[in-house]
Image (cartoon, rainbow, N blue to C red; front, side):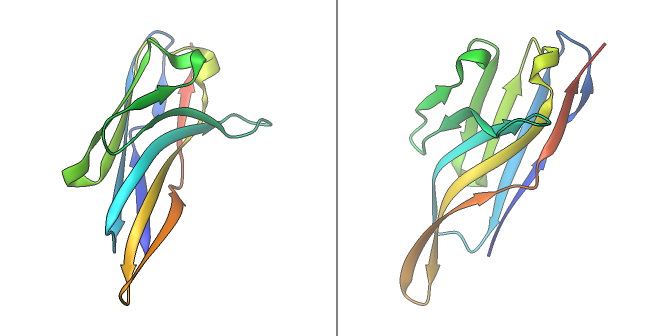
Length: 123
């Protein structure tokens, strides 16, 4: 199996920064796209940022210029640096990864999710 473990959430004041991390572990052959999504109470889960295994990035308009996604392929880890945080960034942040596993001679690709980490921006 594959596990995604997130860390780095918390409570911060508006204008401050946080860095989220998500490490993938388990029977991994390769990892394709990795990304961060967020879900506020009563709302749907939306894409925040994603990165290909080649380093190409994509951001939601609401976070462009403030958030930076990066990854360390050797550690199977993706990061989200969040600067100039606003109250509207408050949500549970979820890590997502497209993982290929090698199972009994075959390759199997699936999308995996972390358990979520709470980010609260409030004065």
